[in-house]
Length: 443
Image (cartoon, rainbow, N blue to C red; front, side):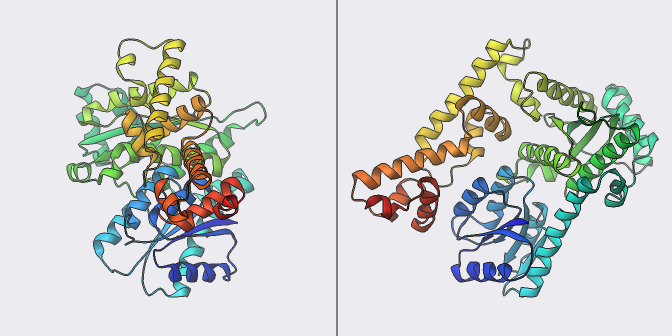
């Protein structure tokens, strides 16, 4: 059963699509309808949305911007785009962000239902991998395993010096593996194949590693030129690369560091969801030059080592741990705790000041603190005791309750004051939070 969010600034279209899906017989657990991007983000933050169906042109936040922000919150969310414009540029942007389909208004109901079924069917097939066991891995994942020679060369490229890199790259080029760059990053996935309550045979370990390789390759479909390969019995390496145009012309909301963070989180979640395996992900910085791959490899390995200090965290970006404090020597537990507290308190102070701002995002708060959104989420919850968006909502709800009880402001004025786009959406959030509507509380 799946959760679907429909976003369109024309209420009749939103309700019409909701009614069509509700009567379709597709296995849908819940349907939500939002009338703008801000409302949609609230649903995405609060609910486990599997599929987003969004219009492109919608007032203050376009469907493209909504896709950017939705991916930052839940990188694994699936998207179908609907548009009144058969514009190549829109379609290209949507597909680059991972849209599974691009449908033109006026919508053909049968075409929409086919598209939704296809997206949900793929999700269900992946889940069957875990449910049906090891024997289905080679059936579900049909990608060829990389050649032993190619894998050996790629691992040499990560380990050897500048003088050797050009020669190894030339050999890889003959095998059809091109590393033109000139911008590169390295990610490491370390699988927890053995556990006390789950003994795994050598054969099953190989199959699970193969499944993880294919999951990574599927997630990298939209990143042309990225390469995934084995780097040990329980470890995969991923080289991501961008040419000058792709690197320089990416929209601000789709920064390459955001892309790495989203991919790392998606990879970790997919391995857990579809293979039932715990794992950790280490992410390097982005550097120019093929000769820098050994440096990037070392950064990804170091990022993995931080799991020893943070066993309750799973995805580690090297840059989060290497500000001024980390450049000389590894910090003590007290220094580390003090830095965590500073980041969390600075974030809390920023939210205290800006919680009523429309369109406030985790990405904005993370940028203010010079850390990745993923790491900030982890630190905030660990230090403050609730996740960042729960804290934003708490402030908004407490302020709106105060305004309802102590002033004569109308509902739409209060909604505007605490950062909501519409009074109707504000009322939904308020009732979910307090159990009564604003008007019931006022009485």
